[in-house]
Amino acid sequence: MTPLGPVAAGERAHLISFFLWMLPISLPILIGTPWIAMRYRRQGGKGKYDPTWSHSVAAEVVIWGGATLTFLIVGWLTWGHVMGEDPYKATGKEPMHVKVIGSEWKWMFIYPGKVAAVNRLVLPENTPVEFDITATGAMQSFWIPRLAGQIYAMPGMGTKMNLTTSEDPSQTYGFNSQFNGAAFPLNKFEVDVVSQEQFDAFLQEPKHPFAQLEKAFKKTATWSGPELFEPPEKGYWGKVMMNPDMLSDGGAAILPDHAPEQKKIDDAIREELHVSQNQHQGDAQ
Ligand SMILES: [Cu+2]
Image (tube, rainbow, N blue to C red):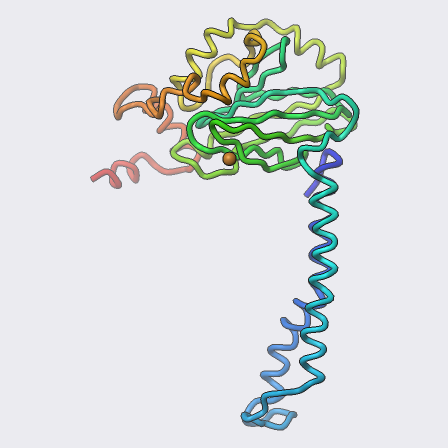
């Protein structure tokens, strides 16, 4: 609930306004239900116990009139919110472009012509950014709670999300919010909003060859390798979107039992979920 950028701030404002506008309905129900039950109870209540009572024009007008009015107002606000914060709409002039490829259970970020990164998103402060998002393998959902989101990423499809970064440098995280299998809880990435100078320095950091990333990305379920790579050739994201299988080995990233890589992933998941070794073995029996 502490937004770092204008999109998340707008989302919070709308959440609060919807909550307040729903109070005229929710409060009378929460207070009135026990009050009526107490007052008109069979014995000892202050009101007249009348089990055959069934209709009051005044009550109908208040109940339906109030509900209709509230829904009209909330509907109107929702319309404004949805149209005003369309994730496809750029949040400023000439947004910076970042291509995103989600794969179970890791994220690739491509800064076209500059750098490719895994699970590390570095953005300059106070800058509009447009993400082009796709996925290989299972469906994912891209969410940076304190900046914007969430938005689904599916193989064979492209989508967009726009946001403006925080005014000053900040650190936060993003993750996949779509439950999609074993290493789902590890599917997170760090988000660093930095000054323009720091961002330029980030682009100059030493990089590994992209071919190395492509090969490893297919094979590992979670990512523990280096973060920065040379950028792929122009149009690479579009190629992956049209042919997601080129960056996935169809679930084989989930290695057979007892493979050391799989064991590492299992251990990491177990540690993340705080499941003890004994409990795990007990489950298998
Ligand atoms: Cu779709």
